[in-house]
Length: 391
Image (tube, rainbow, N blue to C red; front, side, top):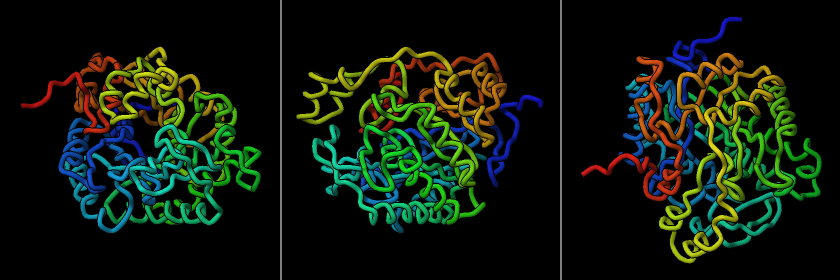
């Protein structure tokens, strides 16, 4: 079989893309008041103009208590006109638009939302400094239906795809974790039981939209914490999702936004910048205890490739490689390893036009230095701190 060309057109479910490079979801911090802003539109327009085949809007919660904070968009009628302006701007630049949908579960800030955060069982959240509430079966049924409703609204808003968030210990991912799921009902215990809710979510989305838009899922390979989801379990979940026929593609990820967020990003943990972005008493807490939660990991290009290749060998679904995709060499290695798409995140914060320049000159190197100082900027508008402020 011939190796696919990363800059050749490709199909993702029912969607035809101009190349195989996707802008990964990175929360933009540009939705104050829970609605689309001109800044959010320009953020994604620049990525689309820069050559991405599809750009992913993050993160669009399926219900009010599923937001990580009250300024995030959740799916309701008032948000649709702004989302339609956003997808129109992306389409005008020749790219497709994907909506990341999900429920933050224990990662939600209950203080900000003024609503209880949900989790598989009652637990203390270090993010809100409050206890979560154990999700009831009625809650789970409501949230499954809310994912289906969100996917239908995504079509109304002009999106070409939805990405279901099954990672980072958001609610679906928390159910997969033995550490975060100690339930004794049909949603806890065995991996099959723990996977019941994520599978129901994906199935509901497929049943709601059919083949009108593409459906991807972002799934953890490793939570990066003791007794969290590990690679062997993730492979089994991926195989179940494939057998269910719910997805057009899988994007493998890692880490826990609740317990070990740096496990995904690799590189240094910018503790000083995180502390500066927070209000008291969280600011002091980060200064005193931040190193116990924000760990540093060595960075290397394509750092999720080795684990993702094990998933690749176990399923036939199209797969998206995420993690340290910064140059043509990693892209070509992904294509040679059987991946159909690659996803870029931090590198496009630094240079939104990097994809066009890579296509024009394959030896182009990203200017991203993987310092991770972009991460704390989500609270004030996601950006690369290496780029001088305008004005």
